[in-house]
Length: 349
Image 1: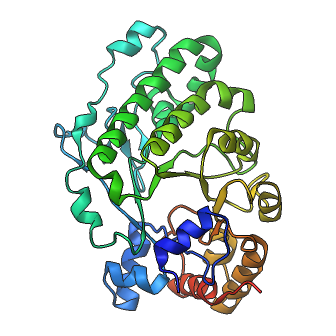
Image 2 (image 1 turned 90 degrees about the horizontal axis):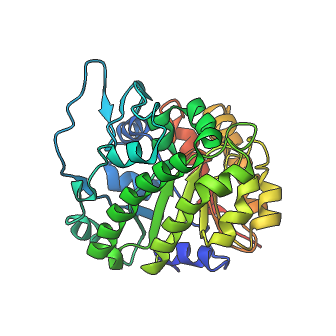
């Protein structure tokens, strides 16, 4: 029988496997709740869920990130936030920027602030057994939104397009160099370069295809090319409805898409599998909201999970998991167990 890493790479080769590879992303709050309920440690919980992936990170080693009153978190780009999780930005420090010179003068972070030297030792316990995710999350789209303000960013795309492109370039430069340092240190123990940028909303994309191609796609292409230069697969997390962008992502060489929100505009699993299932790995699509959180019983969750697997699993190229990047605290642990057990029991005939 294949091990976890072999199952995952079979998915990237579009080959069916006896057991469908499983992906588990969870919030810290859910993870703690599940560990307490099941009386398991971190690795024990991963194994109970059947998670075929493990993840390694660089550590921040830069200047102390002193927080202003009311802030709970600060990004490398100087954006302070407060609220649930990482919260919401308290300021938009580049909102008034209108010239290339102002962009160049901004205090951009140093990629050396992220230390990759412990990644190899972190990964050694899993090498060869699990598919290992690495590289920087690289949420350049979110950082530019926070730097400028979301609505303001759209105005500036029209009024100062060259300035906005330079901001995207500078933010992406940082992430490219951080990940390059990681891969120079430990690419041989990493399998997949995993990044995240949420380009979709509930009803569809957050910007037009033309604007995506002009402002966003160049950064994504740079990131894909970096991962491929180290012979890594590249997979992007993206929430919401972004179907119009998928052909361009495939053309650019993206290897996989996560987490596939089935109730978002244009993201019906049947259509995604039919139209893109032979060209890019599809990861997720088991509805976190209507099935995992609100599902009335583990039996219901199991039945709905099997329905989805019958659509997505044939022909390979599929990794099974929830439709949200992180399973939320309000999700019943018994429902998550039912989902992962159903995936483990499912067979393609």
